[in-house]
Image (cartoon, rainbow, N blue to C red):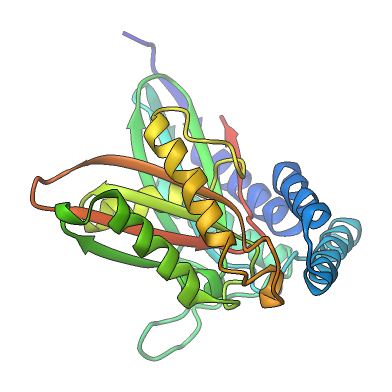
Length: 283
């Protein structure tokens, strides 16, 4: 048995704040690399122009410590807590929301969270959407993801039937992207969750967006092949960067899968804009 390890929730709050500030200002090197590669490979003149604007925006944000996008996102946080961790000093959810609150105040980020019916803003970008998993060991892993509304609005979920099979999944994913068009600010990253239940498929899809763009599914060669096929089919749509047309509509497609009920085939598509913001740390 592992020995218990204490972690202060104030440290968690501090790290959440730092991660959200950094994620909103500086695009990850892995995402930037695939954007630049796509720009160099783009055949459309308008598409290359759009890519140039995207790269310039990334540079200005990093240089001047400005948000990469005016939509600084809904705060999504994935937490893995080792079963040997003992959190001290308060509640975990309260600590995460405190970190989000401070990040959006001190970073001068737009607060985008409101009551769904009255549309009254909460004023501090809380509450965050928090997912917690208990895992072996004595570490705590934080993954933060500011998720913009434009791409989230284009995300969908469907309960397909088992007879739809792989071809049905492909049709559904491609049609979701086709209908989205330029709205999610392409070039996009497409996260696909297969299996589980209605809510589980959506969480699986969102988690895939934190994978380095284009890194194939290493657990299942069937899914790696499906990712390649979907990427080709999506880029054949010709939507292009920011909807100006071209050879790159998606930078990557990430697919993951969990077992499901014998009568079901849940599929979720979570679309991410080219500002694929995420940061993580292990405490």
